[in-house]
Amino acid sequence: MMIYQGKDYKDLSEKAAEIIAAEVFMKPDAVLGLATGSTPIGVYEELVKLYNMGRIDFSKVTSVNLDEYKGLSPENEQSYRYFMNHYLFDHVNIDKSRTYVPNGLEEDSQKACDEYNQLIESVGGIDLQVLGLGGNGHIGFNEPGDVFDKVTHCVKLTESTIEANARFFNSKEEVPTEAYSMGIQNIMSAKKILLIATGERKAEALYQALYGPISPKVPASILQLHNQLAVFADPEALSVIKEKGLL
Ligand code: GLP
Image 1: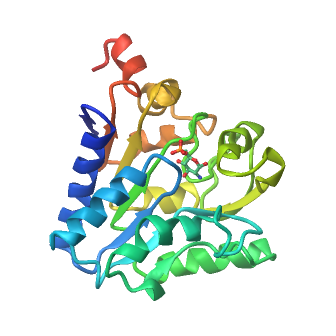
Image 2: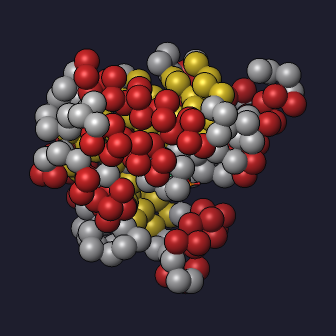
């Protein structure tokens, strides 16, 4: 595991974007696993800057996103498809027909999840997966539980996640209660993983994820078993790890 201690959010976003640009430079037809949430917004902004400087070419890139709310259409501003278009895809030369997000409008959960698993396989798996971190240690929408969910599945969101994500909606009642999310096996099969965490709100979860017991109670703790994990965090997110003298 490599931990990059960013000076601040901008610094770590720049560095993470450079890693992604390097990946695409080395493998122009890379499959990028992308994440939503507020954390990676800075990385996407930096990627757009690098694109405008001619330092990254997305023309052959494929992307697969981690998750999508069940029931939200791509046009819904809170959908993760909308988010990706807004922050990244609309501003770079990626072929949108090769950008994939689980189909939130598919009511048949089994069908939506099976199709997504097949899709990930058909694109040859993920070369580089970007991850944010939930305050309760979730990755994608893999919520704490008794088992690690392997592949794409329909998730019942926990109360704490609904509350945390309510800030993006008009009210808590508007937050969908279910989502389709890649599973732990999909994520762990990625060749490289880039975990980004910022702010004190994530400090305990980041400590548990990187140094706690490996347990489905903290889904991100499984990342300790990945041999190409790079963590990009700011001083606030690293505060508990530092307090414990681990860094
Ligand atoms: C959501 C997403 C996760 C994300 C998490 C943290 O639940 N499904 O992929 O990592 O929120 O969000 P934020 O980065 O806004 O703190």
